[in-house]
Structure formats: C-alpha cells, structure tokens
Image 1 (cartoon, helix red, strand yellow):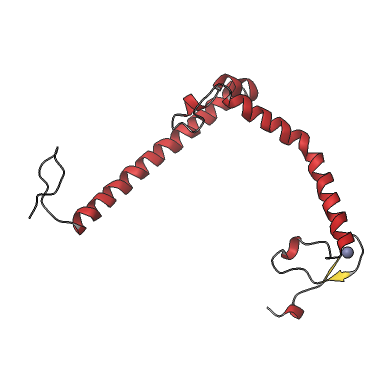
Image 2: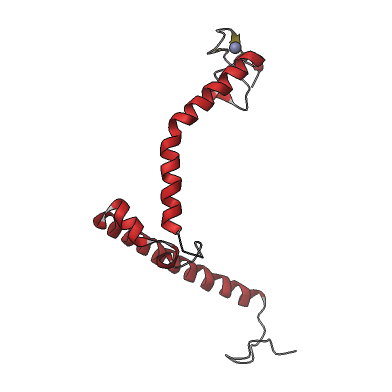
Length: 143
Ligand SMILES: [Zn+2]
C-alpha cells in the first residue's frame, strides 16, 4: 500500500500528526520523537505495575500448584499438580468440571493419535511393500 494511502495519526503525547509504522499499524499511538517514546515507555511501565498484583498472585498460585511435583510436564495430570491446592483455590465443583474437561480432551486426543498412527502405518506399508518376518521380528525379509 502507498504510504500516502494510509492515515496519519495524532500522537497521544505531543499532539503532532505522524505516519504510523506499517508493522505496528493501528496499535501505534505515539510518534517517533525520543521524548514521546520515553513518555510512552513510562506510561507502559505504569500500566504494567497496575496489573502486577494480579500477575504476581497468578504466578504464586502456579508455583503452589506445582510445589513438590518434580515432573510438571508429566503426561499424567494427577502427578503434575497439587490437586488439593487447585480444589482450595477454585472449589470442588469447578475442579470436577475442569477434571472432566481434561479427561474428555485427553480421550479425544488419544483417539485422534490412534487414527493418525493407523493411517501413517498404512502409508508406510504402501510405500515399502516388502514381506514382514512375523509379529515379533518386524525386520523386513531380505530379498
Ligand atoms: Zn509525539
């Protein structure tokens, strides 16, 4: 798009019109003057500090949810989380709903993976149609 087909914007800090950077687009509300950039930076920091109490509480809860759990990436959610912390935090009913959703998603994923594997195996066999020794020794029979 031609530079002049875009609309100029008014800087939130100095009030001058400026051409927004096309990479930033609609979100840009500050011109490129160093003074305005500094003000924007200070403004963003202030906004972040306003949000920080929540962010900090969230971080602490996540930490408590995993405390004492070595393998937080375990494929078994029961082993990766402190479920009593979760229960105390969101209540029994919500926790049961969450567990049920997790169970359904896992079951759906398992089915999806099984289907994908079957299709993948069929493709491999089609690509390499040699005879297989038997169900134990899966190395192809030399031709
Ligand atoms: Zn400005």
